[in-house]
Length: 159
Image 1: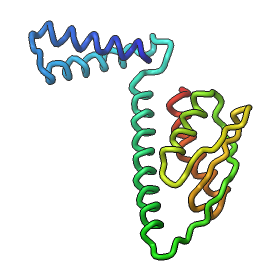
Image 2 (image 1 turned 90 degrees about the horizontal axis):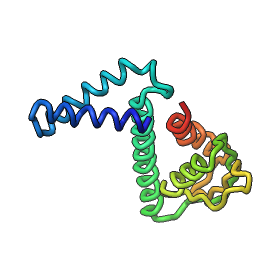
Image 3 (image 1 turned 90 degrees about the vertical axis):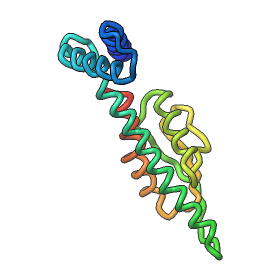
Image 4 (image 1 turned 135 degrees about the vertical axis):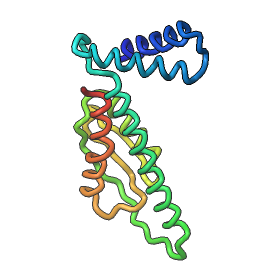
């Protein structure tokens, strides 16, 4: 993937300098042409087309921003109530992620989302112990994490 992106950037710069157009529009035109060339020759590459991976990374970032906004508003809503009606709790979340990098990314995304915090990761990196500010149903929250963050992380790291 990195080689394809580097080649695409080289093609964009070559296009920009050959046309003597040192503007953003000239670079963008060269970048699109490079992307079309690399996409057209993708069957000769040992790895998948890099645009798919970039799209998966963008989708993960958008998912995180969505969850950040939703949980942030929920935390603020809980805090401005006259009577605090939260049920904090700790639950164990078993993960299907395999590598240390994937588990670390998942635990960081959980920690950065307001209202949740990863307390510990088991030695085999298969179970995360998570504290939630308002824990109604631990299995439902665990399934939500699997369906959102874990699925998006797997799309980024595995192809």
